Image (cartoon, rainbow, N blue to C red):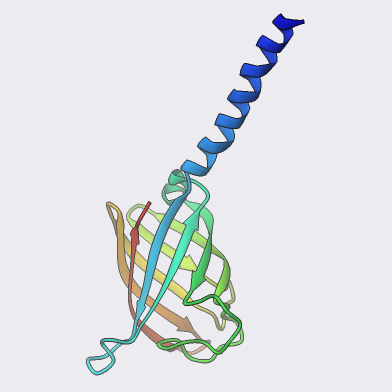
Length: 148
């Protein structure tokens, strides 16, 4: 009977250790959407993007959980403009080609929120925009950096 306990106990410890190792591989990023233009330089919306693993950001297609601002259901904070397609929390579709990254926060053709940037080590810099059938409703500089 003691030999069975000796075999079962290490297996339970290994399973628990494996569960905690999965959480370590999560890749968290800070997102910053800034207003376009000189007079609105200090208007920023901060957020987070969380990939299920460190390797996800290198994949051609992946997804990540996101929160913008407080993630609440209130009106969209500046620099975003009113848009029924934009949510302040959810899942974003992420596409990567070589050193470019596209994050589609709403996955809609004529409205929503998209950020496009160049990946350099643990940072991404580029532009965000709220697309419309003809042009965009708002746009500005986009930055993202890994914090874990």
